[in-house]
Image 1 (tube, helix red, strand yellow):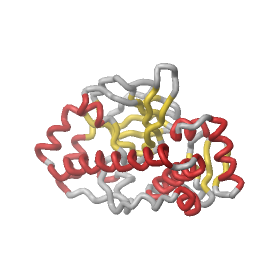
Image 2 (cartoon, helix red, strand yellow):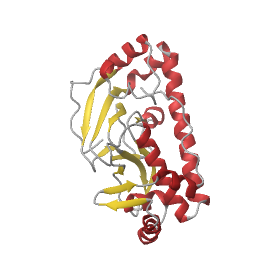
Image 3 (tube, one colour):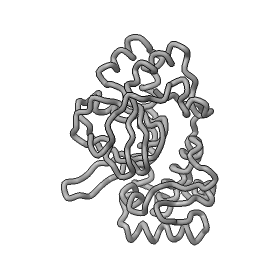
Length: 250
């Protein structure tokens, strides 16, 4: 782990977690809430552009995103980057390192990010004593697989315009569910992030996004993309949305 602020002992009480009131998340039972409150070791503040986890690293911690945006990615030796997926509040990161022994990808913050910190060595206690929470972790992993399936379909079979429309619609729908937009529907990504996600050159990406802008579906501003018509973006991509009911988080 690198370029992040030290873990501090202060922590938002799980009973007062800002994610719990959101209708998108399932409620904890009293026993589950008590366990998670003790499982959590602290919080970590990360600045925009900082690395949260590094490919090949052995991290002693798991993290749940409490606030902010980030992304998971892999690098080739020549510096080319493939963004795999984006992380938002409620997402669990570092599980792969817990299971495989080391991280197989890196994680970077798009905006300022707050993380809840858990010791991975205590994860087995969760499996032994709280099978409902263990199922939640399985559900989270299966959901990540489903999202990656859709991303792979997009890269493999959608046109450049459809790919761009899908990605922005996906990020917009996730952000909307999590109440991340305060009036302005603004996603903190650059055109380089989109190019590295879609497997397109920056020139091709710029031309493609210009078409969406000309249709008044998006507006590019300094530091990100404002979504003007999410439904039309979904229609262009042929994407029916996230299709989720209530989901768990740890």
